[in-house]
Length: 91
Image 1 (cartoon, one colour):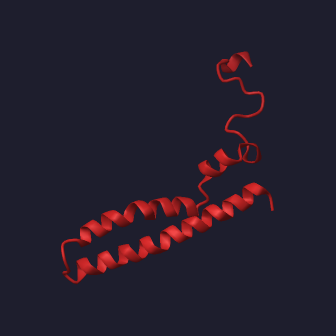
Image 2: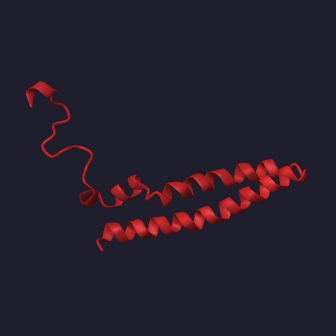
Image 3: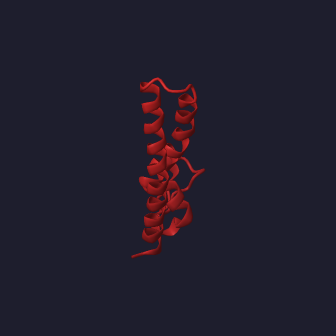
């Protein structure tokens, strides 16, 4: 296993650890809303959404983060020999 793959596994594991409690909090807040509980359920929903989004991004492998950590193994955005400032017809 290459280091970038191992880092990807760690990133996905952190994503899972982040998503599970966020989903639990979101479910609790939604149940509180449905059952007519206190008004703080809206605040719980707002607090659960950022960790849920971040955790889902990490679960998908966080391609930007892994590419930043291991740029040579994932490949760059530009093809080899690409000149950024040179017009297409001059290449």
